[in-house]
Length: 331
Image 1 (spheres, rainbow, N blue to C red):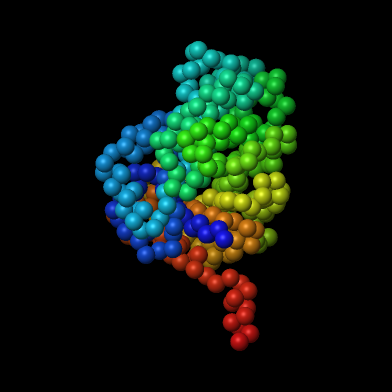
Image 2 (image 1 turned 45 degrees about the vertical axis):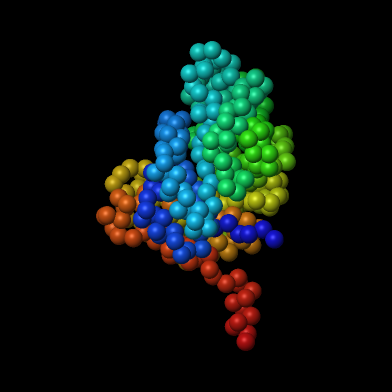
């Protein structure tokens, strides 16, 4: 029987002693570390690798694991795996924009086999540096909308098809470092649609990240059209990818989003009833892992507002299944 994964995802620099203290004694069993994405994702990942190699940071990871919490790494890694300065040598590896010009900004030309093989090699290197405790890897494409390749070959592929080609290549690479590894397909922004022509290799699992949902309204209710759009997206994705390792990456505690990705952080307002309802919704659909971003809730937040609601969030996983509650009411 697969153990339910109950997690939180934070920025690496937010892994402080006080954060570790807040995780202690909760039912959270997975911690995801997420270097900042966006246009500077490669720079942030390089900085994380430096931090990761330090004795101080490794001691913090040891403390986390001593709590029975596994460590994973979730990041927009493509621009690190395909450094932008390679454009000077291999412009054909990079995407063609709508004006038919090769550009180095985001993503890549997924029809170029040499580029895909290079990505695989870099993925193997990254997996050897950041070995997941669970065997699940989350090396994502670039953090941007409407930036896929439009060359003659690639334009026949949907954004989801292009992403699937990339994730298959990444899986091939990480399995050189970790033979039993699994790599996620991130359903996010332009890739919520099921791939049409590219099939996932064995070892790809679904990670569902409904970034623009209303976190104050349960997904299972009909009051919010944006939420209902995500519900409509999820069904076909589950039919396509299956439920094995199905992972949800939510935004219930993502104070970086709520603060507009600017410091100082704002005071977070969390709707625990919505979180509980959403957890039921996802579990009923077979989610093995449920996590939320919990960024901008570390020491600087606590200095301004006091303790963030991480323990309260964790408590939402302790609700009894609906069938159990109904049985108790009958007795």
